[in-house]
Image 1 (cartoon, rainbow, N blue to C red):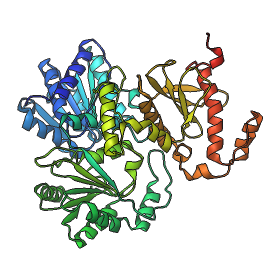
Image 2: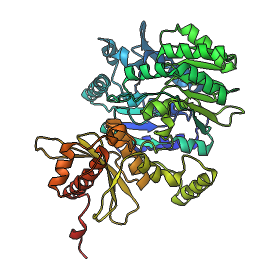
Image 3: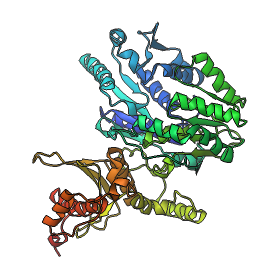
Length: 546
């Protein structure tokens, strides 16, 4: 394997440091697309093989099984020589290094045959943000139990470029972050190109209901179709992306086909692919894009994970999403470095880039802190330069931007700074100073159990943050749960206040409010303050000794 980059070395050393301390925690590596996640994992695998470990690499889908094997053939031939696959008719069950998909391992007998040849000592879970489902955890726990029953040690390593889930379930429930590296770091270090984002909003998009993890797909399909998304996408690309090589993301295969047709009619060389496109045809189309024989390839979700084309310098978001994971995965397809490539143009027709910020800190580091390599002084200096340049992602304005977008309510008469934000009807998120006058903050969510049961509190990130990061992380959680009251511009907030809201305000001798939004804010300011005091996360100013 070629010389590892500094962030890869840090990641490898962090993993082995935890393991060699005797910890049996399941570890997570968070590295953006294009920064060597697979090669970092292979170096860790090599270290395990040298220690006589048997290794199983689990990927989320069958089509991704060949990718680790191809990476071994190119970068780690010593590992490729002992590797095998378990997929369809391929049954290299006795290999020292096995690659299989989660789907294959759920087929009765497939995992049993692998374990019959000896326990697994290192389990590598690729795209680990998927691995909170019952299916995944049945596989992981079965392997752990089998190895432990043999009196041996099993280590579990998760890999992801997006250390969060659309449904808001925290990965920290099962994973300990060993090392993280974020897009901003990789751009600063020269391993990725910066995105240049242009929002060319599709007119006529009506309000779309939100489901548990993202927009309701049936609403989204109908809204995009009614607004003429395919035609508008071609027009927006004509305005901004001529001469670029693009990947276009749509919500359906039908929209991908229509968009490709609209692009071809406008003089582009475009094609589309889907999960039903024969593999040989997909390979031909993607090879044409890679060598510049095509200008654009449209797809719904075929090219979100496990596909790389460094020559792509334009990503077109022809579908809205509230999922940070989806957003970063799509963005990442255009950020890889290539000769002559200076940036990646992101043409966003849905406004996703106005509600999701790619500079949001990623997973915390091993101590639970966001992994910012820059000093505070360096961040302020960079933010000042961004402000002068008019950047919409100005670091100094992160706090102001978050508070302007989401309906955060400042909590007063406490011994420390605190904000609260409604996250649906049964939970509230908080950004709270760790101590009076401290520079560090925590992001909390408080779940109301109902039926008179006590409230349950959960830290969204197990570590200290600065105030903007606490607000951004808390705001992202609230939006995933229910954006109808969290978003300051939500249409629901403008509706008349309910009788129940004003009735409660009256009981507390507080003035009535005209709208649901202002009533919710007034209630939050009262209840949030009380909740923090009761949880001993803050003190009433009257309780502080002088």
